Image (cartoon, rainbow, N blue to C red; front, side, top):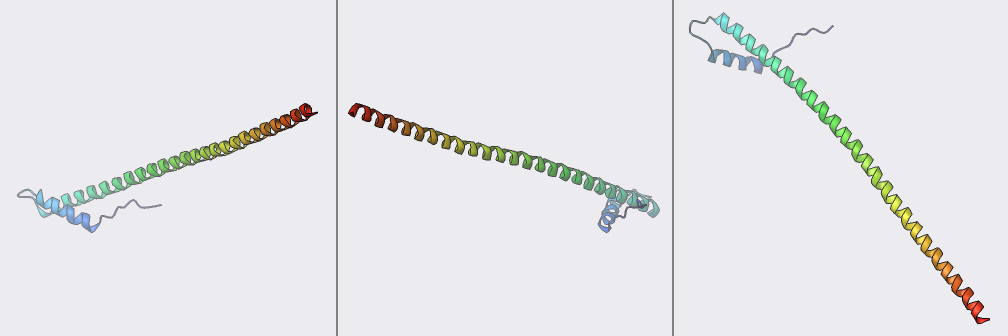
Length: 118
């Protein structure tokens, strides 16, 4: 089992001491100031912890969004590839039909010339 003891960074402790000293009231004991400093330091640590969790969550959402965009762009790329392949196939079909019509016309002209010439 993990202990849920949060360690407070030295920077947070220094910042908490500065804040506690700025808000210190006349007649306030050192013990009271120390307790206020501890509370502020714990608050700072908790805020940082929540901020890290929030940033992890946002990063996770951003990664999921990027992954979804990649899937969509990959799918669109496949569609474009299929579309270009279809254009190539259509072009080949048109040229085949044109060549067939040319052969038929040439054959017709040759047969017509043979029958008229005889």
